Image (tube, rainbow, N blue to C red; front, side, top):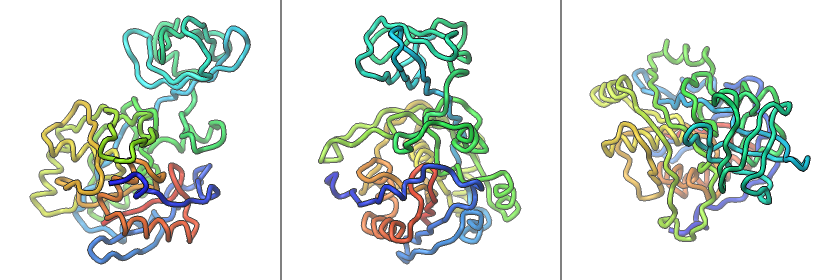
Amino acid sequence: MHLSDFDYALPKELIAQYPLKERDSARLMVLDRSKESIRQGVFRDIVKFLKKGDLFVLNDTKVLRSRLNGRRASGGKAEILLLNRKEGLSFGALIKPARIKIGETLTFGKGQIQAVVSSKNEVTFRVDKPDTVYSVGVMPLPPYIKRDCEELDNHYYQTVYARHEGAVAAPTAGLHFTDELMQKMQSCGIKFAYITLHVGYATFKPVKEEDITRHKMEPECFKIPQSTIEALKEAKKNNSRIFAVGTTSLRALESYASGNREGYTDLFIYPGYKFRTVDCLLTNFHLPRTTLFMLASAFCGREFVKRAYARAVEEKYRFYSYGDAMLII
């Protein structure tokens, strides 16, 4: 299976740079795999495509303000993206510019927070606790959003049900939900359960192997609570559909199908994968040649999903993190 099989053309102007004011006003494309049909609607009307007893599994990870903009001792700009906390106040990080050397001191905030580049791709802060570090950070918007983080992103680049801090990217399929919409869905007999998978920066890692089966996924930390396991068992018992809200929820659920309820998953899903837990998928429109697009192709069928994407381009859907949604049933 070749990387070029998962390419498509997308005009840059369709990449959403800002969120919609009303989360649930995004457009919704509904793909029916059995009929290979495409319907369209608005996200707030998603209940039209659902059945009583359907179980939605959402990722309740919370995005950390992990991008820090600061200064070098020379006065030049410095930017770090905190990827994971190591021992003490040392963090794995992406550091820009690349010419910053080990041993350099960087200053953040209004000069009150300092960090030393302690080794390659690592910084160590001179503060008393991690919360102090994140207090001077901003939301880590994806690289395809070509603007600086703004105050509105603190609200919109976070799901309304985010609970457990640890992600450096949002589980974007969930950004469309509002509290009011979830209450409406529950009143119609739709059920909700939660997993936690801390989305890592590897979600943007490009696939460089032409033979995609040689690509290695970076492991991400996940946990499935007992309450969700019970909800999954109940759904299976009642022949109710299980919806994964986003690729992260789907990967966590399919990892659970392999016998793991918590830990790290590096599950790579591409066409040919046999799904064991998830019946339906809610997702956004993904970048070409990425593991996310490969997962959608595995779930929906590569030719069908590429036809749907072509239609989304033709009808000027909004793409990627702040874009519109796709429901695959």
